[in-house]
Length: 338
Image (cartoon, rainbow, N blue to C red):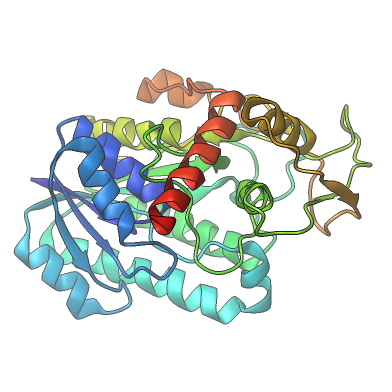
């Protein structure tokens, strides 16, 4: 019996594969490398000393998804695969709806065909829209403020409706906040294709000299230092949350619970930048620019429910996040230049 990991070569997916293997799970992985690197698979194997079956496959191709299920004894699915760039989703909504929804439909249809009824979904804190207050709890009103968020919310709703229609299903919805960092080995980390849009990849590009300017988007928010506050969580902690979800899915006969995966602590953009400079002894020379439209001043989680029901709690702090992220790009750069 194996756990199928869609998008397992990606940032969060690769770290989750490591933690699953370290926990003694058998895994089957597939990815089409749209926004990931095949090197991540080698990194997973080196870190764990374990091998696993991998398919280069696209979730939009039903025949490819069916092949994976037909050739393996799949017990449950962790579904990461999907487009995830918010600005791109605003420019190309049809692209996001088509890929994220159709791909998920294909996976769920195939699960139904093969009698696999346990599904852990990679959701997002974007389903809370603009929360009226913080911290954010799982029972807060849900809304979507961009096409990317809409796809996450639609899939969450589908899971709830499928469970209501057939209580044999077990869905676990994991709402991430802001994953950063990398595995301490430096062998896997955030390695997006194309132009990065999240804070840490932009910071890393500036530190590596790949970017001339690093600009904070707004320093006049109603926060202690004027910059946006977010719940940054180390990707290894996040990955361990998925292992806890897999175990929880086995314990549950059915259900569709949602859990926040965050630290419960808000870090400002300036805190992240200043900590990165201090722990890595680097001067980023960042500047301050205008606000980015649509950014909430503060958004961070209350992760109490995950601790209570999953037995999971984030353990790594902001210094670990900044140090490990920088170590990863240094290791990758030395490999590329070697």
